[in-house]
Length: 311
Length: 301
Image 1 (cartoon, rainbow over the protein chains, first blue to last red):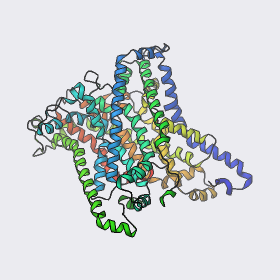
Image 2: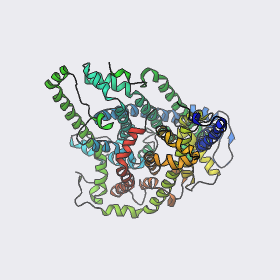
Image 3: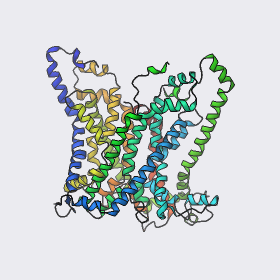
Image 4: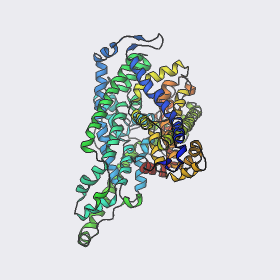
């Protein structure tokens, strides 16, 4: 990288550098303040609160690890952890698979392809509340469109959100509707893959599957990685749709961690306990993201050069 | 680039041409037909919920709970929309959302473009480490910061005001910082070099050269910010307590089983439809270039 100051007169170099550094700090100051005030600061504060008993009326009372001890024996916490992990574990791979398939299909020259992209992306612009309300009505056992359609083919549908066994799968199905967000990012990645790679492979007689396996998947892996990390973080925290559709019920079968945290913090005003839940959640996110990062060298390929094309 | 990569011209050398003549074209056409059909069916499935929302919104109250169902209400009752909007002070909520969204947009655009320029173009010790920290905060679950931030805003007496929703926007956003930094890095340095030689300060360069040059990226940030803020639910839910201060997103949830609306599903869906219209308009307005700019700038690096 060529040095920008190289062209400047030699004697003023140092002062130019200092000047630049001062300017730089001023420019990035909002971002620094943002991190300190809204990320790092609250993070540390959150840990402190997790060691206290605090209901926002009296001042926080230090209780050591009591909240965490309670947490370990709180069967609702374990239940919500299980619900959250099942939700994420099923929703994320399904969403990514659908998104990738759609992106592959939409990355061709087809009639109406722009319209298709728009349609598949459309659900992602809806608010979580609107999505939740709409799908609640779709899942309505007696008059919802899903059971009406099932009735047409002779299946008597379950009560969906009202049925303990079906409520969580229903939420997962709802999340699939918004796969368009990941799809568009996959599409971006697909458009970045140089065409000559495919042409070269075709000359070598590679078939569709082999091209997908040996070119598309590896060259798309950094996008998959990006989608996977964001997907995991997003799925573990999903709140609005579940809040609107089931609010944890029936019988806590959809009590996601985020809902349990919300209840403790803003309904029971147990700020200390809620913070402990938040930290548990943070640790889970951290461990899972670290695992994904650690696994990355095995399957994520970064494109250094495009030399390999002319084989 | 997108033009060429969309469809892939197949086969080049003589032998493949022969093979292609034999089965190539028909095969690729077959793949396209199958793809098209799959996409068509998928699109239909994706559209069913929208269809269901609109058709319910335009039904007579008495037709909502009918079996067999009325699939297409004739005539459509547009007046449902009007009725839903008078059941709650809709315009009040829209105004609140409008104020919050525009100020958040302003703050996000200013702070992110300003800081991103520093991260992209000016050198200082520790700059890259700080940028890494910014990126790392992207992975911090918002649940962790939720409670302390709420407590802090409560201490400041900001609860039940728009401030907790607006002020943080003026302190950058990791995702947009990353995006705009990428964008600045792709702009040739020569442009600012000459301005610098003419004696322009960094601030001047940012304001008069970089901002105009990055309009497409800024528009993308604005659109994303619109969706993020307009659709935000948890923020207004916990920070605003007066119903008159609520945003459209939360107001919509009031509709859910509220005594005013009760089981009047047609009004509920009419309201859902109305609440989704601003997003729809922004999307249609920005679509081509918004999807395109995710495709081109969103993810390099």
